[in-house]
Length: 558
Ligand code: ATP
Ligand code: MG
Image (cartoon, rainbow, N blue to C red):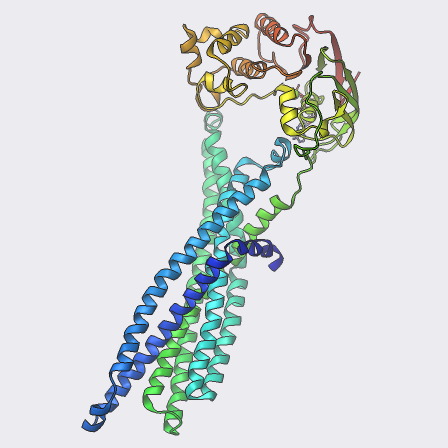
């Protein structure tokens, strides 16, 4: 069990000072609370007894215990306030730190590696699972620690007056301290774990449902999808209900235990009074002190109730963190000259997707000279886009060598690679913003004039009457304002704004009619003059100006 939580517990050292202070304050609060009740009990009883005769009433010292009662109650209030303040502050700091830490773990992953996790799934881990970890301190460590100290303190207090009672009650509390967590954890482990999974599934599904609204409506599948969602929700609610039920049950059991223990103390103390080992007021002190000490125990079930949930979250976070990124870029320092020629060598490349049944690329070799314009032509599904992903290092090949400018692809640092190679992926992402915003991703310093010229070259200038209106067109979420072919040309424009020595385009003319495709190709060729161009496509149209056309089939070149 601990091996899942340990990596996260270790992270607590980042807030060790604040967390320890929080526990200390929690303990001070509890000690004040026990002392307050014990002293009050003693005081009231002693006053009553003293009042029985005039002489004792005259000599009775009201002031010291009175001041004690006031002191302890102030200490308790202040202690509780600062305990909450300090421990919540520490927890929030820790969560903020954990989130950044987790995010930094995600950064090294390439786009390919990240695509293995669904987006909603990652978001869920970043938000809900990390939130669950705050239970670890606030509900687990701190309460155990405080309950343990409470047992010791009460034992010591009782021992001042009667050792036998102290040992017996101390033992009872220790047993409770061990048994309660165990029982609570065992009973609520299953629903807790289920809750973690159900919650994440629910969230992923919901995001999917919201994102796919248009499709679901058209296929009349919305109702089915929503029913499924509702079903998932019901399962989650059931788990939550079970958890709540166990919570009530464990609280009830604990109250029963508290009542029984107090009765036991009362019985033992009464006997001790009877035998004159202790006097009456001390008996009240013992009973009320024990009652107050149980306050520390009421937090325990909560902690262990959520342990299953917290563990599952910890495991899910760990799953992401422990997966090493296989695609590693070298550091900035020991790197090569920048890409300047744009020659590409692929030598006997083999690649299989982690979840793939068979190799997608099977011994592919290709040599592209600097400045050469090469088209890679092949049927759908033959691995063309996979080749694109290997060249952009979304994935690394299992075997074989890729070189650019006669240096290994993996020896370039990320900045060099991205600046030396401009790409257009098969699926262009359009950001929510204006056309200008979207283009400037390719070159933040480009002037409006340059942007407009490029849009004209790519047949995109028809959407508005003036250049300013054109660049200010709001494209909406996911580029709903654009047709499929327009979005693709936007992607091309982005890549051509700052053409690099090497241009890599995946299906740039897909979805365009022949006339437009030819014009777009002319725009591409104009920008690619003097640069290396690798063009992936399954269409033969508009390829007449290429230097070479190679055919790809089933993961190899023919
Ligand atoms: P198209 O012309 O339709 O774009 P393509 O030649 O670009 O096709 P790829 O996208 O390279 O084809 O896919 C090649 C094969 O690899 C396909 O059979 C596809 O199912 C598989 N594939 C692609 N991406 C993944 C992935 N992430 N995991 C597993 N298999 C994948
Ligand atoms: Mg493709």
